[in-house]
Structures are given as C-alpha cells and as structure tokens.
Length: 326
Image: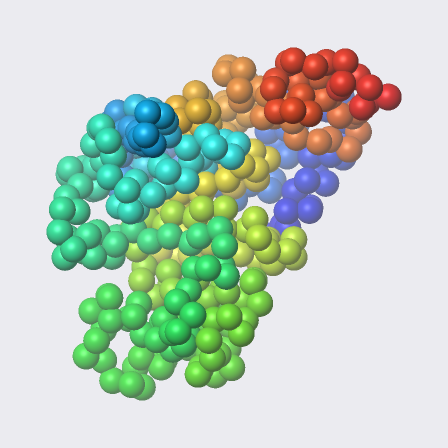
C-alpha cells in the first residue's frame, strides 16, 4: 500500500495542464483505497439521517451549526466528510455518536429510528458505533492504565466472564494488529506512549470492539507524516477485515479523493455536494468544492491566491494576492 507522499507524487508527475481527467482517474485507480466501482446502495443501510439540524443559542445569538442535512451510509462503505474549520463537521460527528441531540430531524440506525433516550440504550448504541478522535493526547483517562483501557473493550463486548488468559490473548492479538507488543505496554499509562502509538492503541480498541461503524475525526492530523500512512493503512485493513462502515472527517480533500467510496462536501452546516470521488473531484458543480480543489498547492503551478484575503474575506482583496505572488 502506497504512502501519502507516493500518492501526491503520482498526481504531481505531470503538470495539471498536460494531464487529462482520464489520466487522473487512471492514477486514482492505481492507488485508490476505496472500492471505486462497487455499488454500495445494494448493501444494508447502517446509518442515515433526514433533515438533521443542530442550532446553538448564546444569549440573543443563534448559530446554525448543521443545517438540514440528509445522508445514507451503507455497510462497508468508506465515507469522507470534507470541509474547512467551522463548516459543521465535528458537530455532525457528535450527533452521529449520540453526544449531541439534533435540534431537528431524525437519525436512523440500521433502518430504525435511533433511540438513545436512556443510559442503557446509549451504551448499547455505542457497541455499534465508535470513534477515533483528532487528539490522541486527550482521548484517554490519565488515571487508567492501558490494561484497563483494553479490558473495558472486552467487557463491553460481553467478555467479562472470560478467563485472564483468554483476555490476555485477545489484548495481545489486538496490539499485534497495530504493530504494538502488549508485553511492552502492560502496566503502563497511555501518556507514556508517543502520539502515533496512542492512535494505534485507539485502533486496537476498535479491533476488540468491532463496531458496525467507525467515526474517524481527523485521526492523522496531529501525528507525523510517517505515522499517518501507517494509521490509514490500519484503518482500511480493519474495514476490509470486518466490513465496518468508516466515516472519515477531514479537511484534506486530496486524501478524501484517494481513500473514499463516497465524498460529502460540507459548507456552513450544509452538504453542498455529494457523490462518488471521481464525480465530486473531477467534475465539481458547487463553487465551494471548486475552491477547495483550487486551494490545494501544486508543485508545477504558481499558487493562485486571488480568492484569498489575508483578513479572511474571500474575493475582497485581489491586489494583496497579486502583491504576494510577485
């Protein structure tokens, strides 16, 4: 499996003005992690939503973080939700996890209205959906050792009555899956590990839990480039082995293009474009999608800063952009 650097090099080998859409599609075919030609609409529905909305009120100020979005996520599908900071991605992911309730709309889990009205129902729901968060350093309870973190996963899946030897073997297998040695981790705290090791330990948790849906919120943004490809490789290997649905939250549109089976573009709380990666990236319709693609720096082209204002307002100060390019 190719690293992210290799993926970028493939795309940059030919200048954009010499590379046709067919060539770009062929490039993606050779390095794509997604099941590009598979029709996931024939697979069972895992998670869907209709008119899902979240509104926050602060005094007299009303903020619509997520604005009447619809979505359908199927078994085994890898979905990327792409948008800049403040677009509503994380708020949506919190609603999908059941950490926030929608202000309007409804979320369906396995084609049935989701019911997380009690603590017991919420814990049952979490057996089917789990998350890997952006910051590995704040994802763990600092008072719990690694052994307790993994034991909780086994107990959650009904393994509380297993013998100590059986639990040890399961923890050893989970750590081995992410290239960690459990014998070197036992009796340690998560904060004694590096960032990359902590994210791999988070994937080991998912290996033990085997949820139907994994929500990965920027899981590679706070770790080094070498660990990034490894983490992605493990996530996708886990998807292939268990058939779980992976919802990837990211601002990296290039990464989304190469790994996804479906892409949703989010702006100001709304999905402005959605579909197969080739359709969304090679023939974008929404102006926001076109801007996201044009904002990706390319080695063989001068950077176009005409749409960017240093003060954060689009299309307001082209003279500043021209001065910068000079």
